[in-house]
Figure 1 (cartoon, rainbow, N blue to C red):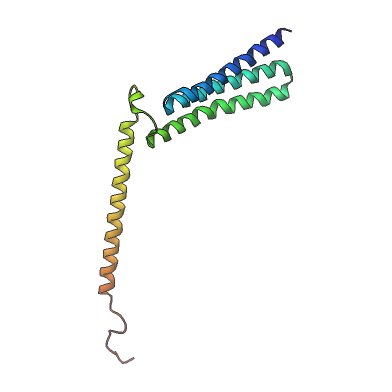
Figure 2: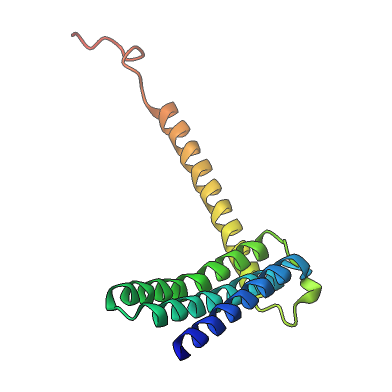
Length: 151
């Protein structure tokens, strides 16, 4: 009886967290806020559901599977949210006015400058290599141009 009540409370809590995630994903103004609203409550809602099912099952087979599911989500949801946020930042799909402090601005500017410098260096190297090949082709004597050496 007590396990049923705890399980029901966990399921209700998970449903409320899922509702909050949905409302936040629809109502928040920018990418980072929506990403935060969609990832955090979803993860904790899943943990509550797995805990409720584990309380009802009480067998180690399903419980071990649920533990693996929760661990997988604990490791992958933050990484996925980070990658989505970084992609949104790089493609300028967020409001910079909503940021308290822009910690990535210097790093992105340095990476962009490094990419531009590498492209310019590669273009210069390919141009100089093409020029050297043209000069070498001009210096090469062709067999048709050689005088007959008695062959």
